[in-house]
Length: 311
Image (cartoon, rainbow, N blue to C red; front, side, top):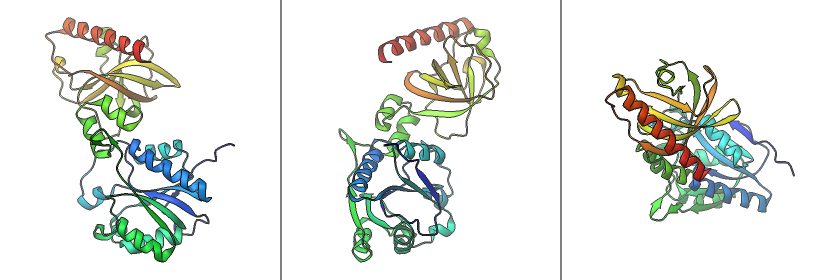
C-alpha cells in the first residue's frame, strides 16, 4: 500500500476533521529518542484507527522567552522533512510568539489539542512542560484527559548506557567535535546544508581544490578536519572538510571548505549537503605550504582508508 504524503498544518484554527494520536515537543535533531516516541505514536494510532501526529513549535520557545538565539541541530524545514521520513500522518506547527506564550496550559489543551486536533491519545516526555509559566505537564494532561476524553502516556527517556539521548547532549557533542558519538545518538550522520560559494582558490593552487559552503545553519562542529561525504547534483563524493580559520595563511574568518576526491568542476551556486562521518584532527598552523600539502595528503589517505573499511 502506497504511503500518503504527510500533511503539514501551520497554526490550524479550524477543526481538522480527523482524530489523532499525538506527541508534542521541539524534536530538535529528530534523534533516536524522538524516533522511539514517534514509533510508539504510529503503532498506537494504527491499532486504534487514528492519525499519527507530531506537534511542534517554531521558533523555539526559549528563543522567544529569553531573546537569545539558539543553535539548532535541525532548522524547522529540516525537522519537517525528517517527520515525513518517519511516515507521520500529520505534522502540526504552532508559531511561538509573545501572544502564544500567554496561552495557559489549560487553554492549549482544550482549544488546540482537543477542539482543533481532536486529540484521543498523547505520548509525552516525563519532563515536558508547556503553557503560560510552564504550568502544563504530564499530570495536568492526565487530569484534563479524564474530563475531555483523551489518554496520556508518559515516556521515559531513551538511554545509551548511562547517557540520556537528548537534543542538548547531541548539540554539545557536535560543538565538541565528537561527531561519531553524535551520529550514533542521532541515528544518522550529522550534516550541514547550503550552497557552494566562491573562495580564494588557495586549495586549487595547493592541488586540493575545495568547495566552500555558505550556510545559514547555526550549529557548526568544532573547528578541525573531518571525514565527510558531499552530496552535490545528485551524486555523493568522498571528501574531507575543514572547518576553521586557515591559520597557515594568517586568516581569522571562519570557513567551511570541502575537498571532494577526484573532482575539480566549478559548481558555484550549487546546493550542497556535507555529511560528517568522523573527526580527523584539529586545525593547526603549519610551517609552510609544503608542510600543509603533506598534511592534507595524509588526511586524504586516512579518509580513503576509512571509506574502504566502513562504506
